[in-house]
Image (tube, rainbow over the protein chains, first blue to last red):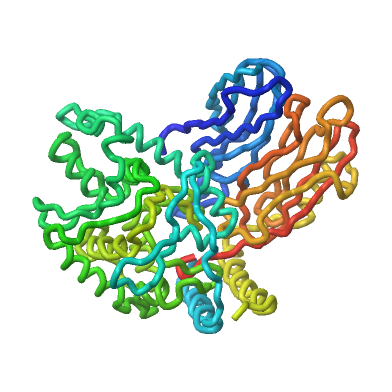
Length: 108
Length: 285
Length: 151
């Protein structure tokens, strides 16, 4: 599989104090550590174990992830925005890699 | 699953079909919209079709599965389509070309194309589908190796190209070359019983359409959403993979991908979905 | 003809028997006790009350690999009326832990949706921990079906 690639959907603009919906998706096999290969050996666990969303440096939403989350993890949640700024998203892989994405929003 | 479990499973499958043969579970009466764009998901069948109406497989799925397809962000297969887009723009082969070098913006050049395949290929003197067209381009124009079946980005690039026809009704031109005789051959295969379970495509997807086979709601077996995302495998599945899967499931030996048999079947089954919108990438169970 | 409830149960039972036989060879499932233990660790030993939290899950999942799950908790999400976190637990998976959502005032609402794996028919439990330490839970039974001839 190709490198994990995140996708994020955030509205481009919102009114001050509005609660917006954010959707995120990242391509990842989420190997559970429960499966066996053709030779009967356990395929080692390799999952996204943590997802975080920050807005202008402050935590909005976080998720501790276990292997029961489906391949290509999807998270939908809300955020209350009072000012214009930047959302930062990060996904932590078991192998230490951190995938990130950013989205700006105009608040008026 | 070991051999005995497989047999047990098959027995359950048969018992379900036979035991509650009268069970009806009709396709739902809803219109599929994708990002607000209305799809043709049920329409009048073309002349000579065994059904009065053709139905998209989407109508046979549960509410949760259906919801995955109504928004391209929620549709996990769009990750594959994005990979396909990257391949479209990536140079490969001795000629130093990408798909985009000749075809430019796929949103324009490939619009509607996916709804008209398979076509007649004069050079090969047989039908050609999107996967084989990609390989022909790679060999003849890019100086690149053809993709092996389902590998190297074949499913993703096919999905990306077909996605450019999202909403366009399927219509193939059977007057091209000898396409009509391949349609005839495909029809014969569709109605021929096969394998240890002695089932033809038509037994499930025509005779028992709308009924339950164990926990599965039998659709018309339309292919207008392919390559489609399957929840079962968590990835894109090609038409020929699905054909082979079905043939394997009736315990028959299955033909190679892109073989004469499966190309004939693709021509015929595509025709059976005439008028349905291209939904690629669909989402199925 | 409509399928009666009894027929449905009979079919589900037949299907389940095949699945369970298939799995017993390789995988030990978590028990309801493991799930309870995990929940108690999360709540600090407190028994969750019902109410406040709503878990939305399909009654029947067409495939256990991708089951959409939503939670929402009634809360103003400001001052003392704040949801700290929500833990999702499945009592019939090899490991009962699914995910834990952490909310803040900036979340606006304590609501989230994800997609999860269910190895078989089982209970999914969502437990909310409020800022004041009170805990609430909601449980949904999700039936996981297996497909046609090929599964």
